[in-house]
Image (cartoon, rainbow, N blue to C red; front, side, top):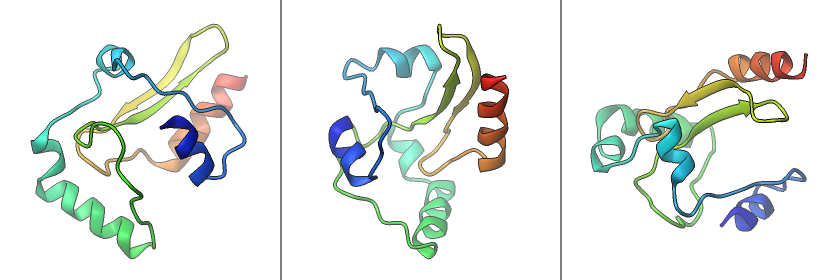
Length: 104
């Protein structure tokens, strides 16, 4: 799945997947029907569709919500954002700022 994602998104950087979901559990990422079928998730879907984003073929567990984690070499986590519902994303500027801090 990670290779498919990397290809679809035309990424040159590595992408990893955790099939046993140990990372999801450690980071307390959310999962469940209520996180996918609710008003906030619907509004997030409308926002994404209005900006031209389309979901590709679902692979794996459709009820997992992701997040963003930035870690320094060696594993020191400098930023973590766990999505509470589908389509819940952090502000881009927060992620970029955190990435710059991680490089400092």
